[in-house]
Amino acid sequence: MTSAGELLQLVRTGQASTRKALQARSGLSRSTLTARLEQLQTAGLLAEGGQEDSTGGRPARYLRFDDEHAVVLAASIDTTHAEAAVTDLAGRVLARRAGPLRVADGPEPVLDRIAEWFEALRAEAGRPVCGVGVSVPGPVEPGRARVTRPPIMPGWDGYPIDAHLGARFGAPVLVDNDANLMALGEHRTRYPESAALVVVKVSTGIGAGLVLGGEVYRGIDGGAGDIGHIRLPEHPEARCLCGSHGCLAAVAGGGALAARLTELGLPTTSGSGVRDRITAGEPAAVRLAEVAGRQVGEVLATLVCVVNPGVVVIAGDLAEPHFVAGVREVLYRRALPRATQHLRVEIGGRGEGMAVRGAVSMVVDAVFAPDAVDRRLA
Image 1 (tube, rainbow, N blue to C red):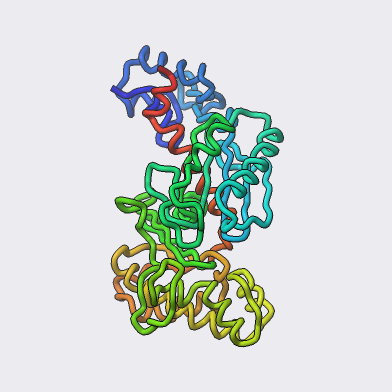
Image 2: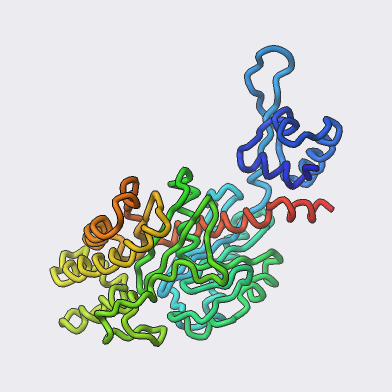
């Protein structure tokens, strides 16, 4: 029998918007349906208002998920920068903070700064917090708010991010890899029709997020999409931060390109610095970006043949025309025509805003899942 939480899910996802439609979808009696809708309305989860056009008889009133009764706190932590926002449950940003923040400084100082931003944002919103979502530039084991063996996050391995932030805000804390959340954000806001979408984030490191059938695909332990550590045998000299040699990130990532520019007499410290030199028209930076794009395209050709996505979004510091032209050049040449005939390769942003959107979606999906809502009502 359809529960109250399942009824809310039907309304929240747009599958039903009137009592008549809910009754048809659920098979509940009118009295049972009314009782469960009253539960949801009393809890502040469901609102009713507006009328559909009548074709005779009493017009039906629309039901909608009340996306203003609480807020989400969401943060995107990158290698040298972070963004935090408070949004309503539809993802509309009510207030935000952003600034330089080094993930290499370790979890406590970084999370303390994020918590400070969250405190100010919560005060501005003036509504209860239903959950906290955090994006990090490292692998996260599914179901646990902890990073596992991150190459570019020293001191974070196994650190209890949920405990650090949860006690302070009295709400569930969910954490995921930044590429995963960027992919979820892209899917929900720009490409909801895509059955298979891939986001490739190329900044200091390289990682991919996959959304298949509307859900993030993480693999059995969070390792899906970790293309930055696929090895290129023709580059055995390139030592990666993970300890291996020849990894794609060590060859084509922003950190690798910054080191190469520095060797050429153009001091550069990060992927963001590489982007700045490309934007300024520095020939060496443009050339390196094109070559790196081709190297990423080689790896993506295999991924595209396996996953067959409709959209590949290149995001991060190196998401700019020269790099993406290199990706397209090799990807379309190396991958099977059947895998690329309907493929779009798009340029995304530098990532923070989309990762925040993905973090909000992750929290709302979890907090308002049918089982979670039924437990709350019980």
